[in-house]
Length: 288
Image (cartoon, rainbow, N blue to C red):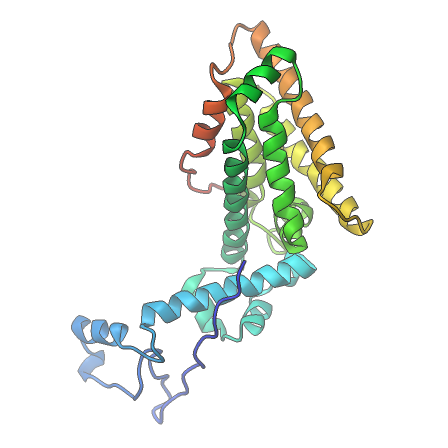
């Protein structure tokens, strides 16, 4: 996540005790608070070379960036509204301009990184040759789509240790307490990504796919935690290989059980994975 540019200093109260608008260069008064046209003009007024909407967007990015560094370094419990605002150099009123609650910003941060992982996985899958997929399916070798997706995920996490804490390590336990971490629906976004990937390969969901996907998140979390606490370095092959083997074993077993039920599989796994993961994501719900 890139750090946004500096935002303007907070407005100081005028003599009447009210705050000057973020887009005003002087106190602006109207009869009865003005009308919609007056508010629209104030909204479009330029301050420091930026419109009000541009400044609001910059403040939102600054808050997300502050949450990123707090959560990435110290876990979700450290990211209180006050701490986030202090890190961003903004007052709490600016926080509630963009987010409804602490849970809102933490879920937004988490979902943002899960979508970045999804994009990385899609990019990795797109680079796999169709001939390699066909050969692996004939020989029974580890599926190249599973290897590519896992490597894309691992590389994303290893590029910045803060990402790993946000998406997997601390996130796997933070959701247990709503006051100390993610809302439950956000906490399961990563396991849903694994579900989507497995369904694309299998052709339909297995009855225990959700539970196994949640377990895969825990497995990945412990591996990443071991990697960082052991001071490991390198390209992450020590992470890619075991995660790939676990995913392959899970999908192979599920495929066998589904085949025994005459459920069939995907006719074209290479196309199916790309199309399935590219579908728009449903709105977040409270249930995992």
